[in-house]
Length: 291
Length: 291
Image 1: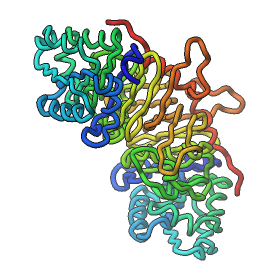
Image 2 (image 1 turned 45 degrees about the horizontal axis):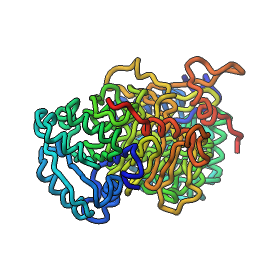
Image 3 (image 1 turned 60 degrees about the vertical axis):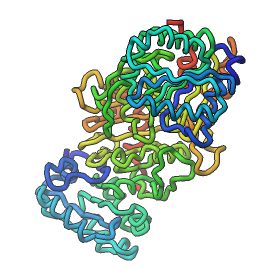
């Protein structure tokens, strides 16, 4: 599906370590959704302190996927993130890709800037595709996992959230998920923030969100969803660093190949859509206001 | 609570690596439930190929907890497991403890033997306490985790069950749970066997079952319960080694200190008992027939 077919925009949320040199199934899909060979792709390396290295990796990958129009958006200050030249690059882009690094650095540089607004406009008004890997994936939601220890068990107070870019809401995203055994960390977030559904994305795996329409899981691993909204817990009453009791957390595992569409119009959810996924699907595909 | 207070018997199901030399909170509880200083404890080392070493560890531990009557039940053959002398030792015991090792070895030696029957009679007719750690914990349920790879994700066909001792039913027990990152393995079991609720017990942690009455979690870690009974999955349709899609698995985390009682008589479940735990509680505390 090309950008021309869909004005709703797409998010390609990647759990890190995606293949950048061989089959490149995920980056290939990002390029297709951005318009194929005619795509105009900008790469935002602001999360990384080795921006040039990051740019050369993705410059080569997108080049080998047939994309001629590729730009490095090297944001090293908030002045950069508010500069007209950089905003114009985003305004012309059909695909915007955020590399890995540190999501706190990314948000400190971009959050609330003119570039941030231009990215929202690109996604919501022009149907552009926004991709992000690792830190670039975590940065996509409104509430962002900022710092957090990985312990054997969920712990009260072990994880801190920050403000992310807000392309999707009521979720929190973690990456390198199975590889770095981060379920207990995601449970820590959800235990204290049951408003948020936790999304854990494995390496070389992407959750592709077709805004207003559906989701798809691509790549080598799986996407784990942790839903604590009906959970019963003592987390409000225990001390910091204690492990909360958690009863009735809902867990979904969507391996690569899973894909779900929202029911069309006022129709009942289709036979294929499991009802426990409906809320999640509505959350992540929601058309959010421009700002 | 001593054996004298309760004729229903107890199970002390330990996730391995319990403290055997310092505070010994779990072994101390096992001794208390077996009658305290007056307990008569037999140690079954059949799971282990280093039975003498195992015996000397527990001989010392139970001795230092004030227990004078302690015996090593060294079963090295099915003849041993059917011998009158060994059965008499179990008939006289108030506490029966099964060490770690390999649960397949334990069941190959004990399963269906006179000793097996004597253990059921001890638990169900005399209110004895049966403890087991690691392999000795896995062996307690009717369906036993026999062999299984630990992969990053649940996989169809990666885990095989065997017949356990059957002190409790409709569950499957894994141990060293958080330490060896075994959630995906337990999900593999439950995905293919949703009849079973998965119980994952951490090291130096015990699930204490007061038959007919309630449960308690003791020690340093937590007990994880995985309930797939209302799950939606494609596991029946995928190939071996593929990762199933799992929607709406219920997960409970009970840290040390959690304890729940069954509602008394025909009363409604008490305020303290979360309804999603009721089935689990009924399953594991169920008074099962003698054989």
